[in-house]
Image (cartoon, rainbow, N blue to C red; front, side, top):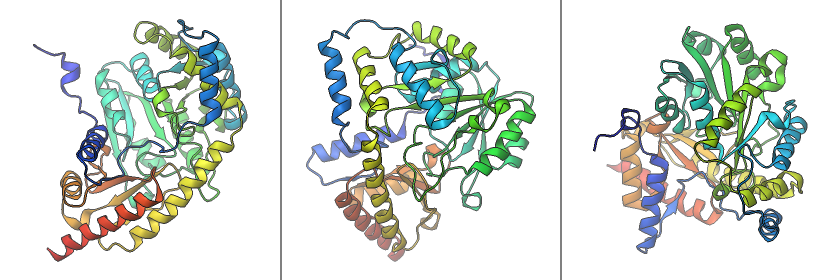
Length: 390
């Protein structure tokens, strides 16, 4: 069988592959400390589950509107106006099968073969793959700890060519956890407007921030940048709804209509009764979001304290999300070698930095309990001691 050329260059998700390996080892009875997946370990809050159950009881089991239940689109538009100061109408919202699907819809609807998409590294590993799937060209702009893993306005400007169509901004970031300040976003916005390109702001981790850091949507900085901004978001991280698969895209009407037409011929509507859970998430109490955020903050503090005592490893303090991006260059191992040996020798699962565009790093998710963090970091310390003594 000859597969389509568009699929042959796509790399499988390393994150999911390592998570699967860890689960297989656990099923074999091994005590694995997994820091692999970006998935809150909390259950979905009860009032959200209850709303979905009630929707089932009311018969919300039929086909729905392709772009999303009208009440959910209205709730998302209200949320964007109140929380993010983004003046979107419900017609500017497309409800998708997860945040990932919103980005894929965007790429298919917007990017032509040969169009360039600027992606700062380290990056979420699916960004370049989506761009390549639609024939676009990922333009990777490397960053490092000297700029807190953030792209600078000068670097963005230098990467723009006549073929540039889109810039991907992820704040708070996966995998680094960095959050762009309002001043940094303002400087990037000036470049985007001056060079007349588009930006998609992936804000899936917007509710998970620490130490009083301000999370600002770049589209809220003025009319010119708002016209060039596309928002991707969802319910997975803030509300512990990863398996519900509900995300959304907010954008100019022309793009939403095009992405909705695409969705009508691919997945059609998102699971109807699940959308009523999403409505409850937005319209109900947000105390659950804050409780989970505080738990993540405690875990972040714990894991950072553990890492400070491990020679040979270094990391920047993340301001958001639930990841630590650790520099392993001193080991002289590739990130894949490091992760494979750590899993085999100490039964600790972490994610290599290679698919994130940084082969001298690993990503550790602290979306797990404190017992696992303490035990896993102790094992990581033993692994590093064995490397130092080798």
